[in-house]
Length: 359
Image 1 (cartoon, rainbow, N blue to C red):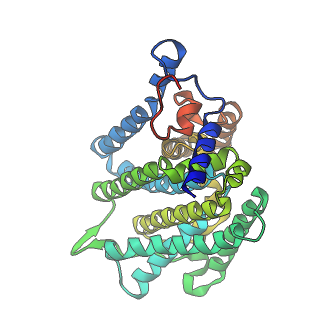
Image 2 (image 1 turned 30 degrees about the vertical axis):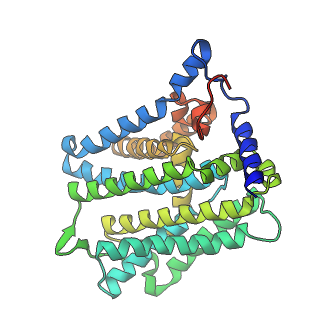
């Protein structure tokens, strides 16, 4: 078994290295390639410094907006894991995001449970549970599921959840659940402002580091091979559909965590949170920033939300048209997203294990 896993690992290395840069040596183009692989930590560091300094330079209302953006970046991170690394086009990611939001809103409204150590794990568990149920149905059948089947299945699930929320009086119907109590830690209430911002930023950083560790692990190596050539990975003994179901569930859990934070930050939940519009929105975040990089999802969320905010304030009648044209131009001319301006394909795929000089 270990021997076959070693053969599979070599095959995956060969797959992700195919078409990549020349071997690492001490001169020429290969030396330049080695240096370009250090771009990703620099980009991550710049984004981190900017995020930490944001509340110090922004006005109060912009800090509230920035908090919302950080939560949406966490949501985008969940989709990038699912699509960017496993190749699962999920048009129903909002189902996990919104269902967790509704779940913690009901806990706060009906049971008066707002403690951060209860509501955030509860929201994460809700997202994980829904993802396991939907992923088990779509991905773990007798025959491998096609991309179209999974895409339409997740889209249908999101649409059905939207219609259910709009028609269920217990969930507030069209109006949703307003006036959610503030999230608490002992006697302290998290209200809009720097405290809430740094809370969600800290959670985003922790989740990001965990995701980075995951995609650079042996499991992430299998995912990289799965994205590049699913048939070859299956040939070497990996259960491709099981790998997809696992990463789909992890993405659902992260989306649930983001939905819980979003519900308490906004103070209400409504049917759009589980619907198709928000599911499509997170796809645009990752497309714009760059899939399969993690940091691209964060950058895409910040840029799309920031440009939308500025356009809606200055061009109130036509801002959706302008934003749509900008997104279309990026997708047409930079299909790998804005991150591709500074990040090479080899670094996007990633390096796994020690590389032997000259090999």
